[in-house]
Length: 316
Image (cartoon, rainbow, N blue to C red; front, top):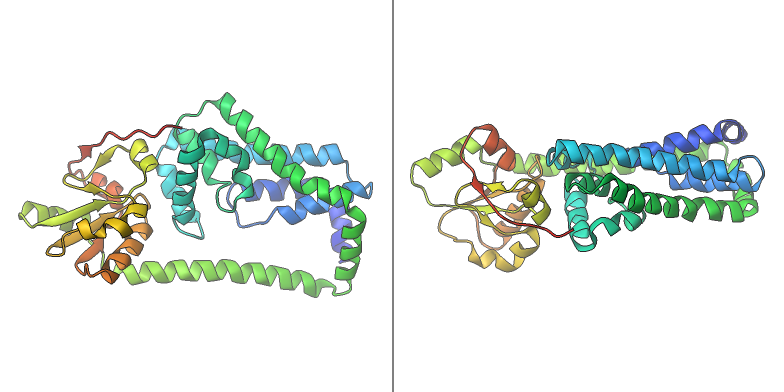
């Protein structure tokens, strides 16, 4: 533990910058303990407080600008990327979209304080062409408040944190191993749950080719577009004949879906996670002939099948 303390004292600025940047780009590395430690080191006179704040702020802005430009120039594809790297498949993306719809660019100020929103919100700001100046204003304010919220308490309570560090030192390296093992187990648990869900639902999926053949053969198929309003605004096209029904509406409106025909669901997430979960919900409500569409609307488009334009605007 003494070696770790000396390492932090010697390379504290670098560790602070790298860890905060890593968390902002979406890696499962918690930055809050490092921010507290940086504040404690500053309180003990072993690190410059203004320098620590500036480094953390720059790291935040760099990570957020990366996602902002990805959203701005990669469009809706960035949401698919976020679905792929998220431990909670597309749940955090969907929740952030609802949050962004409600608060607009002001959501950038408080997003860092809500788990799962910090990475997605800058991407949405870029996706919906928020000006760079407006993004830097709101996101910069949010990054500053988030940085100060943890560095300042570390600075003010540096003596208490130093005492806790001394107590932790009695456990030696075993404490570090325990913390790392707990984090690894958490990530593994989320990953295994994700893989298990996807494996269960691969059995009952339908491909764009199969759906197109059914439509060409004149089969009656109920196609449900589960995408959120922001997804539709970013990509205002849908499969011909599809009915828009947001995830939040499905539980109340499932009685509108015919029971006497095949039902196909699709969403924005490339892993069809939302569609799969909603398929399970519909099965519990007596709709048994329901399947998620492999790849969603993107896979349908990639097969060069026709699309119908939608008109849905979201005020942000």
